[in-house]
Length: 164
Image (cartoon, rainbow, N blue to C red):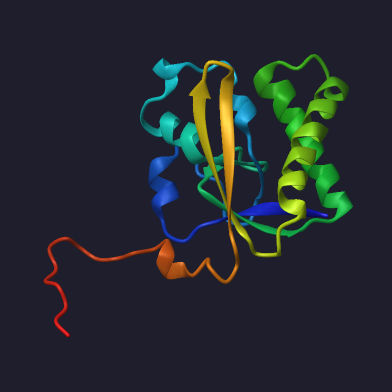
């Protein structure tokens, strides 16, 4: 079974999300957080989380990139339990049992996204508000395509261009 872990190619997530996910934590889409949002909610760091943030299931922070990897059944169970507790604590779910069903579905959705992907495939998510609610689209970047230099371009606008 496969799921995805948070990865960081640079420090940008530390600056663009209110709470950044920790590198290596298991992640899910987390689109449920935005189910009652409107355009008025989409400002600043909240807009960034909505637009392209995966949800870490340890810190409940957001991350731009996740990478597909194997997950063991016992790890999946721990994730479901943590997510169910989050639904009780933050969203007022009536009980852990009721929340566990929704948490199981959320994790299953992420497993479904990851299952057919090769290990180390990098995933991104893009969300938009539509008349019907939140629409999510997923992009897969094959491991051989996911070279670090595609994501982390360093430099300054003040530098002179290099002459060859």
